Image (cartoon, rainbow, N blue to C red; front, side, top):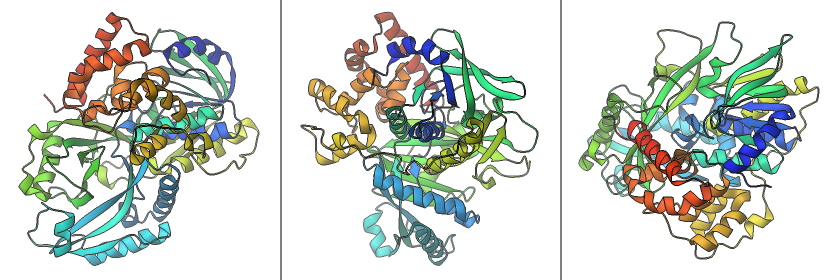
Length: 528
């Protein structure tokens, strides 16, 4: 395959726009990536376009969890839970190092909800849907070893169960890699201006290239809109259901300030909502909030002061001895959930159902809502709606999201520990041979205290279609979240390594650096 970078993009874009496509996918999050992957493996001529960057929206700013959703059982959404736990098990088996098991602990307090018996009953059903038992109650004496620092006043014990965690942005890139290996194509930096509706049917779209300002017209037999919180902007609306954008925000702390070996789930004292404290990428994450997002969707979402206070209160509630303050926060992120609502004005954000909706008009299918975990099933539902538009059946084409590739398993990764090798195989998949080539010249050193390698940064700049510096530091890698001040102190070394690979002159680099640091201060740090 040719290089997948900005130079290739500039050359390929006019030719890609001139083709006749079976399917155009709009939206470069996990849902759009999944649709492209399933279409490509069936031999459909398919192209994905994304207005900003792959995983730029919700899919790089989620809670990072691949789970069935215990709360959905409590709401009676058994089908959603069943599908989720089965897809969770699939991803754990197919992508170790990218999707990894994570144990959760729910502490139980005298007079609190849920109690051990109620929660155990829910988990028994949860485990039955997954086809395996994976929960256990620990009395207080045992829990002290598993959860040092946990609030003990009236504590009865805790129930431990299993779910999974991922790097959501890398998951998107890995799925896109599978799609491209099967003949699909993907472009970022293309904002859809309008759908081309003629003779009562969507026949393509017009998109603006953010890099040149040029307009391009794309033709297709079917268009799939997987734009998440932006879904209402393009689809044909006839009243009824609409998107209710809900913001979920998170704090990231250095692991030494709040060291946890498990994820802790508990009810926040203010509103009885479930919140989490969990380990991720060598740090500790606290999240999430759930409130209406009333700011423009065109800008990166940002945490509010009230949300910071809410999440700090959660830390103080469950880990009082840690005395976590705003000064301990290394970074933040806020994502906007595309929740499908029927418009009931009295419904609280957390009471909205998390099921998806599919809207169909001639030549176009819009998908909104749904869960990260079930992206494969959502993709198949979209393709089933698109197939009649292509006048073809939806052929069975296997169920694995990540096809095993023998050459990947045999790639030599010298100087790396077995866990590091598993991590790279999970995150890079079919691109591992190219990453190994970069490793030979860049070496196997980690970036600061993170698990990310300088070689990963170099490879992303070289072959993962980076258009701007925030693409590189906030999504291809997560060093902008994991390092203090967004990694500002590492920027000279990042520049020396990546500027030649990106093909930017000095003026372009300085402009990108200024834009990145301004964005980080505005949307990924504490509110000013």
